[in-house]
Image (tube, rainbow, N blue to C red; front, side):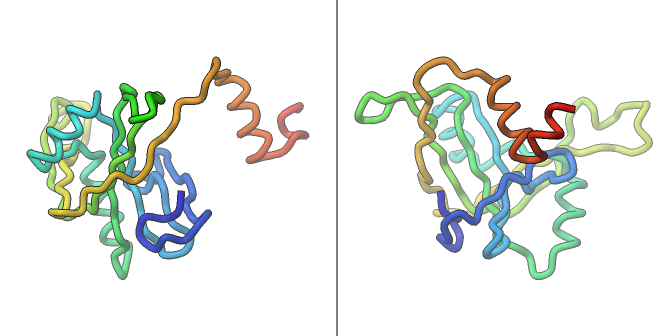
Length: 167
């Protein structure tokens, strides 16, 4: 898919992981950042939009990222259901919804007051800019059995090398 922000083709890069909180995907052309979230189903996604609150990640990671980026990049929340649905052609899909992030607020959760932690930890709640919700694309479900071991092997070889795989 092209970048939602600049429409540049083949510019989105997966950047997810613990060290890339809030930056699951980035656009190599315009710098837009995407955080990917899942909800149980389409009904839960609609409810999240109605109350304008999407559970986010670490609030301190959000603050660090926002304080380190100047100028601030466009930030989007990409939301998809964990349960697939059917499109008009009766194909099984995961509809991908996108919206621009407006604000992020700290939220308390049970681990916030962990006595083993040296500080109070906060999760976050994402508020989206009004009227920015859009259907981005449909993620199809591949037919047949998915071999996760085969996918992992292919990704490893592409990321590193065939030689590194056989060491």
